[in-house]
Image (cartoon, rainbow, N blue to C red; front, side):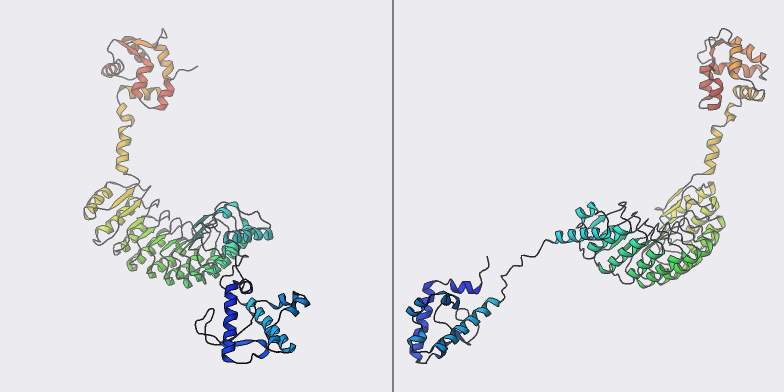
Length: 551
């Protein structure tokens, strides 16, 4: 409870008040000074109670306020003699004294104090919540309950919430002053251009968010322009994901301008957009000028061969990028050659992905010429390119000619190699023991495996039996039925031999004997036709179908 100075004065203990009055009367009698206007004055001692200096302070002789004196009846005022009346003071002087006391009291009441408490302050959480709910009413959207529960988390994940443009506008209002969220994920919310503009305006004011994911929101040209303007002012964003936003060559122009002026963002994802050859030209210049980016993802665009050349030149001039993803862009032979030239002069790039770029063997060999001089690249992904074993051979050959190569991982997934590549790989492995290479397998091994399970193993009597049946359109089941006259599916060796000869199957006596020895496993003179033939044919589905009984 806070007590005002007026109340404190009026509630002083009687003993203290009496001491003050006695002190006043004593000083008045000693000084012999006439009290003007009925107000006693004395020099205030330094460091006395409530004093801060040696100024002369006026004091009243009574603790009663003018309000109390006015409320007292005329009779009581007559009975109570004031100091002014005792010393013969006139009524005008008494009124002057009362006026001075009232003015002093009013001044005391107006004094400020550090003890005063502002009861109007409300909790911060309640303020932000109210702000968001009011914004939702204005933009006619339903508040996101997840945001209300996690508005003070460092990681705020609102992906797949269907916010839309209006929801983004409402959300940006409390985020302007939010100091808790450091990473904001708004992926797949169909924000479109309007929502992108609202979020960009919010990021101009918010200086706490360092990472934002705006992927798959169809921001388009309007969103790209708003983000570009934001990046020119924002100095706190470090990571920004803009993939899947339908950015085309027109949208690439403002983004490139932002990349040249912003040197704080370290990771940018522009994959899965619609940027083509024109975008490659402007982005290539931006890449060359940027001095802050360390990771850049341009995969799944449409740069093709002509757009790949300026991008490769930009990489050659950049001295800060550490990881670049250029996969699924159709660079072809020309783009591969341009990247090879960039690797000759780039001495900082460590991770490069050029998978699925339609690079033929010639392009891979020209790329390898640059790789032969590079000393910083650690991982190279060349998977799913039609460069065959010759292209893989050229790339790994470049390592053999570059003892200072830093490559630790080569990815040739889905590309088959031959024995020459395997032999070279073994040799290079001795130079670089930590090198790891993955590929689509060895074609020579495939041939061996195929030969191992080919029908040449059945080139004996059983294979000849099958070929004769195929050439003459004979059914094995019908043949078995003619041989197995008692329908028991078990025949003697002699019955089986007679059946083969009667069917006109071209087998010599030795081959007949070999075939029957193969089928008569138990050597009891009887052959279980279906069981033995299934065991001999193994997993041959076609022959199993022929041997299956018909219903």
